[in-house]
Image (cartoon, rainbow, N blue to C red):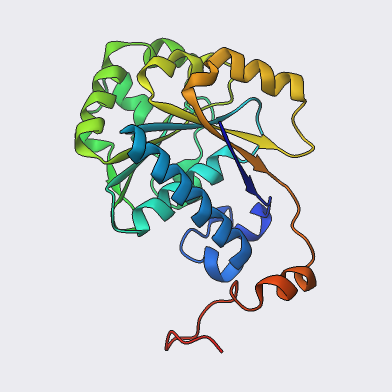
Length: 248
């Protein structure tokens, strides 16, 4: 497993509850570069192993998995090299629709309950090359739906239609949903929030999934050094370039 690192700066990235997915470079250049680094490593790993379906999860709630899944999908699609689908699989507490400013339904739960066809749940996002399936209406027992043939069939079709499918799953330990679909997923990335998650719970999540399925761990919330420290070693590389593309 590879270990990646991200600073926890989510409070800067929201406006009225919506994630500023298009302005991350301006809002926090350091975080933007870390997301790019994560994307490059994930893309290399997925391409090398010929993997298509990647789940982003965590041991418990509150570790930043959803915002990380969104930023990874946005950054991956923005390169123009891949057609990407972001799918909200957290059907108890779906949040991707609200965070991305898209319609909250119909979504995956409506499709699995047979109330809408799959053509109605896949939407284009504001990012070229990135499509989204929101969670839809919250349901209390989604594991049975996710274990069924309808969800399996949907993933098979999405595997053919997209270069990369990113699943935002519920946390692993509180509910069985992520483990339920582990056989249908090519690989997992786990979030571990610095100073938040007990190590024994994180280890239990790894055991529940199986270490061979996990291609990387993101250490989220590691505080960066002071701005003065980074300016000394990186100069102005983290500053946004002026409109003419030249750096001062």
